[in-house]
Length: 90
Image (cartoon, rainbow, N blue to C red; front, top):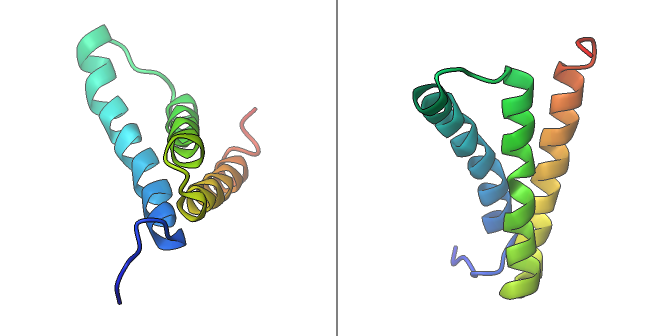
């Protein structure tokens, strides 16, 4: 299978991995730099929101609509999971 640079699969993989990487970087860097840590809910939400600049770059700057669609889809899935996990803790 030959992957095109503009494919839904690339967007799904990017949308899946980028928030996970950002979340774990927050777990490591924020306590070492600032001496305190934010709550898990806010770190998860920030990692989720980090997909939006990536989506904007793919849709506007390089015109990869299929990849951007995959990133947006994974953002919605992560958002639904975040709301489900944190539904009783507001």
